[in-house]
Image 1 (spheres, rainbow, N blue to C red):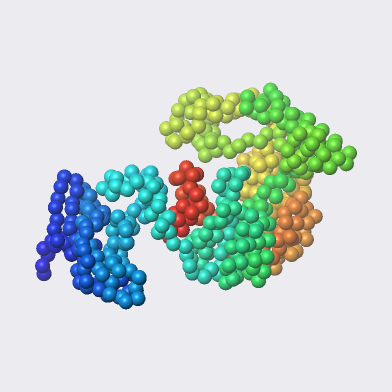
Image 2 (cartoon, rainbow, N blue to C red):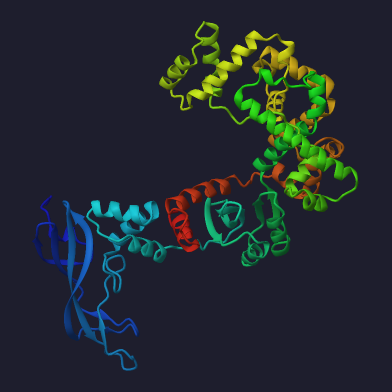
Length: 518
């Protein structure tokens, strides 16, 4: 078997090598077409009458750390077609070799496209230069746009959701093919009219997975009235959990009376907690003023104008959702609390030493976080149990009421037991939310209507009313195998691509990079 190297292996299939010259950082390869005749691009007639020749340059894949440039001998033919309006034409090369007017071979253009898809403009150009493929960032983006292909297969099951061009300012819409697990189109906004206009050109769609916002539901109902709408299951479960948190917030006054911690002693608070407590006192003054106007029959719009507060803030006050004394965020110490408690019980009371030990185990927080924790522990040891009575935040109570009792400390168990016996409406809301979650997990759609009737007279009545308004889509979400999780994943990928371009990518480039990479 002949294993000798042939110069023809350097160039794309369909070209003949006439000569090779090697310079310092460049390999020049002279090539020509092996075909004796050319075909007119207008009439398709074959001609062997050569009018002239010229040299054409095209870049190819690099070789041994050197750039490769093809010097292509191109022939001009005279067209023999009687009725053809073109007299002279240049020969064309085979598909996949060298396109018309292209300065790169097809295989190099393919590499350039994938560099643009993966990295974008400037990062792709930087990597291409290291790979001896010198292309500019503008060229990369032009190739990505030019070679982008929109899926043409008929759509039957789609997911639709919005994504942020700029959060709280401008949004777009992404549509995904759930059967083939890929995005198909990006729309410039999330207006129902835009979605409706696109959906009207998709008559084969029979199932649409969407979130629970009303805009997409209305667009689907108008454009595809026969299609089945499926609400997103994750959002349903998240909405139920949020409804329970709102129920706890509404009941915070009763919870404080039940636990017996209606008064907070500032002497027991750390510096950060004192700031939160002072903010709580200011909020209480605002709440009292707004509630007084509301009880006098003043509409929410007038209250907003008189007080200058945001309408959502006024609504939360009226609903009783601003009663938390402390609203702590997730602490960076949460994962390290068992180790800290063990060290404290063993006699290690120096906060700085504890912080240095935590740093060696991967803790990224500051020394102040550990100092606050150590201060709280010392004050707890110096004070009796009755003076330490303090109600946790609504979020903490909601979390403690929904996790297993085996994971609670003794004090947490006592507090939750007091809440369960003293505020039965919160316990009812928790059971309703648990039933709703179980209904979705076990796909028991027949239990939805009785659940709505039970929940309509509870603290989560707003959730029940929302489910009733969108009952068909919620029922389909419980029974159907389709959901909008794929679309959410594609939105995460879209965010990555958009941030790679520092948020400056237009919709055509975003669509080319997101869909063209499939």
